[in-house]
Image (cartoon, rainbow, N blue to C red; front, side, top):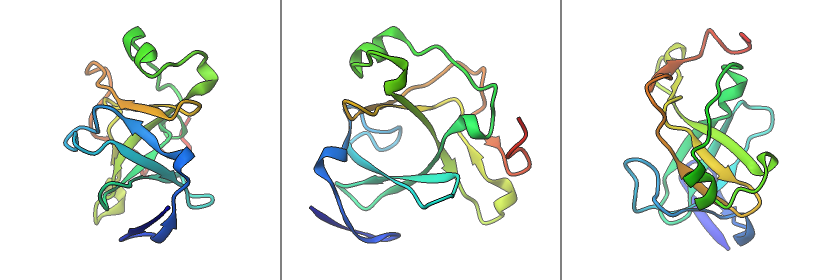
Length: 142
């Protein structure tokens, strides 16, 4: 199916690649269907809603904070039908401000994706990790 986007123009959506967020994303609970878009070698990927033209920049948090870790709650693993660790992809939402040196991500609210079942959920961790983790100067700082 075809979908028109503000940032990417017309995209061809493979229905087998649609991620289902049963509870939506924080602040956008009514939006349930998204696809992942990548732009080559960029560290930022995109979570594009296919119900509305809303796009979230996202990042693999392990590329900017190698010691990032958390235990996935058992109820979330069950809800997303995760059977093995290899099925999981983790992203965090990025804020790209006008001053790029203030680029940040929310390490407290990761998005968990079962790449096999195409099920996804944003979870909230304890305050062990910040909601606003600036990483412009930290990229590559492992």
